[in-house]
Image 1 (spheres, rainbow, N blue to C red):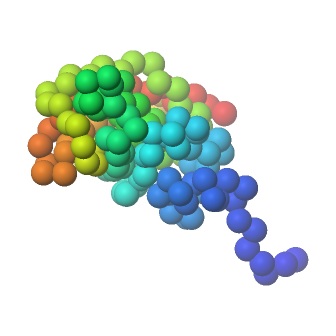
Image 2 (image 1 turned 180 degrees about the horizontal axis):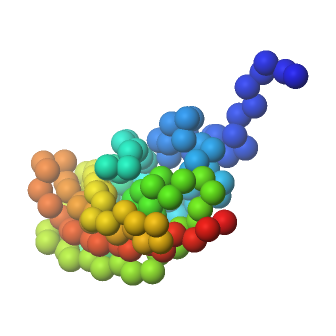
Length: 152
């Protein structure tokens, strides 16, 4: 038996998205996905109690120069889904079944931070509130996402 560490097959992708190596076996089965890469989403904190990631405004704007409303939702769904998977564990699969968003303030430059906190963590459902803020800490949008937890 070899003492050498065999890296996760998606380690490069996962590390680029800010996912620590100790979580690769838990969250890395499918990687982070191409949309997360395209949007520039990077995780900065991962726990059952709170999941945090950032996303640049640059490259994710609508024609008027503001961060696209759909970009807010992509960040929220990414955080909520990863948070639900974190809660559910490596043997479960999570699928989004509902998401909603309220946009409070526009942003045209800088970095957006999304923070997901659990509203409900059950055996078959996980619901998270995700708040997006600008670099000054002002609330940009609030989303709620519910994921169904499926046995593998």
